[in-house]
Image (cartoon, rainbow over all chains, first blue to last red; front, side, top):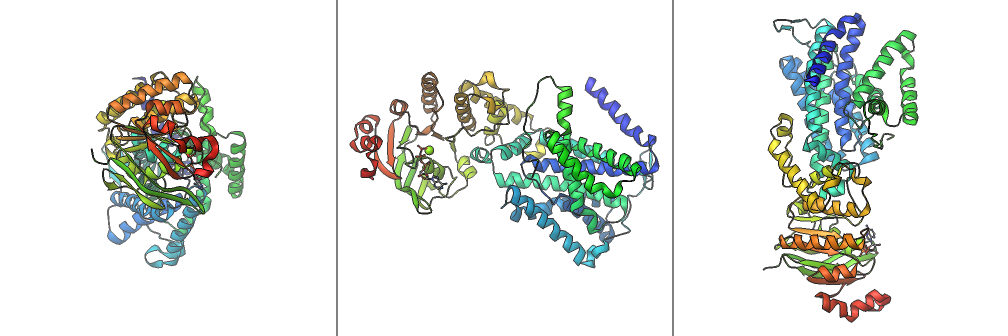
Length: 325
Length: 255
Ligand SMILES: Nc1ncnc2c1ncn2[C@@H]1O[C@H](COP(=O)(O)OP(=O)(O)OP(=O)(O)O)[C@@H](O)[C@H]1O
Ligand SMILES: [Mg+2]
């Protein structure tokens, strides 16, 4: 009962939120919602212990694929978004063959290389990817009405509601996976792969599963972004964006489901409100780097550890390992 | 009773070192079989080959007549051969119950779609019941919520066995299960192993505690410097001159 009322209040707050913001802040809110999905999907991959540098490129795969499906095949936008997500997941399965020969640091580098190859392909082939300039004039989400609310997708508020609903549904799925025996197996693969395997766990299959699911949801985030912005190009998915995702995850902490979300929200607010106001936008990568280093030094368990301290009586001491890679 | 588990000509070379050298022996179904030998004799390496952790350089491992050498560890596990590790290898960050739940992976295979939709309640309940049963068997019920890494050495060894037992194995390979246990715990654990055997589980046991080995095993294979040395019942092995010599440090001459 209590949980339900908290949920309803939270939902009401999320619905009311954009109306308290300016137009440009509403636009930022849309990106924030999409980035929450991106960083949460990234966390699912980190559950198995692998940190990828290709996640943002995989997001781009979803964006490109969905854009092309609508443009070339005339597929209805919401359907093409799902197909974009599926494309990203399938590509991850393909990539898993070379990538899962590597672990840890080598996987990190391998995933970076794979991402760069994909970006090169986008740049090199003007047909169908549009070369360096990418694809523009991507179909927007068509307007529709659900009776009580008229979705007009030129309004960021409408897109925020639409993307928000999809992201909440996606988070719910990711949450269910993590709290299931499948999620436990991901943890097992991470902490002690030998013992997991001796218990009959097919390591390769579970690593691939986590990679494919994470990539699928990243692809969905990409598709949501592409149809909102109207253009995609190779540079919107470069390593700089990946560094932002890593920073969100590390600053927020990856031990809990909400850690990376917290990191994403806090840093976005910091970035868009504080930095923009102060005119320090250009220095964003520098400042993000500084924040990442400071948080590794002074808050190694992330923002989530502060929340845990505040809400729990029993101290939970789970060392945040690998955060530095 | 045909040959249940047979090791034939098993050889493992690490570069120039031959850790296991043309080893052959048979394990009968439903017995406790000891594998002994001085430090560095190649016992763990033999376990690693049987369980699929290493691919043998040469030789075969036959389970019910099927050659399982070179299979991956999870494929061997799915054929009913489950192992524990010499050094307490556990999911240290997970709770005791979660450790045991991973052990139920084979009898209750997770299904992602059912998990998302909540259609796997039966399975989850079954898995938890089995995990609790295994923990109960090894006397760990009172520690269910503890972090595995925080347990005492003896409890960690017991948990390692509980994880293996939770999967309903046919064969358990135990690598030095009694290290870190006091005599009391060792005695208790020996009792549990006899009960496992009564349940029809075959146990292959590596152990340095000779009293435990002699008290438990139906048959014992002794190896030294990777080579087969002797095999027999506890009485024979105890009095076997080659074995005595190997253990008294004259192993070099024997090999
Ligand atoms: N991965 C490896 N690479 C190289 N040499 C190895 C490897 N594993 C084991 N060895 C060597 O093989 C020999 C046998 O080792 P093994 O661990 O099987 O002995 P053991 O009988 O289990 O000894 P202990 O009673 O001390 O556990 C040793 O000389 C060891 O150094
Ligand atoms: Mg050993």
